Image 1 (tube, rainbow, N blue to C red):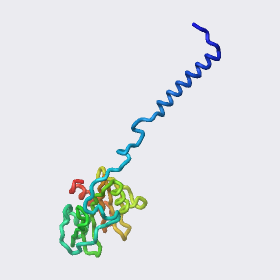
Image 2: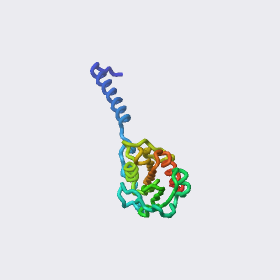
Image 3: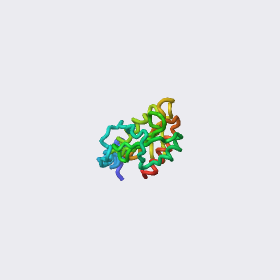
Image 4: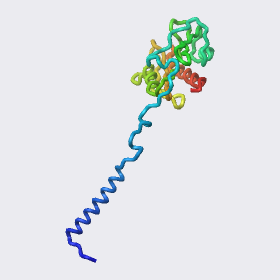
Length: 197
């Protein structure tokens, strides 16, 4: 076996250590296919437009139907009356939305409850609808029913309560003249259940 000089052994040891360090750092810091965004993961899904998609994010149901007897296609008037705690004197529907937004009246000159379902083209648009109705900085988090997310606010003595949630490209916004957001929540949950959203 040939004898190596002291410098050659030192160089061989340094080369070995450097090679191991380089191999370790390359495997620890190496990039894989999942590290780099692809057009599929970074692009948001867009769905076909439906009636109402063209309306602005801040569109709300028109106050229609005071004294009217239109039927809300997804909420029973008697159920709403019992849930919200106010006598139902009229119902209207805003056909600009699909399904139509429902406006429920009592004796006041403003609706006792409004229910709006918005099928948006993107998830970001659905979130924007909810954020407009229930701004993050002035509401509590809403997480019901399971899989839905948004905001809730109880009435402040003047403006009533709101419960607004989104899932995928769909937003559901409920306002009531009541102080408790739990009533708006129950109406939203019944709407989601009845429409199988």
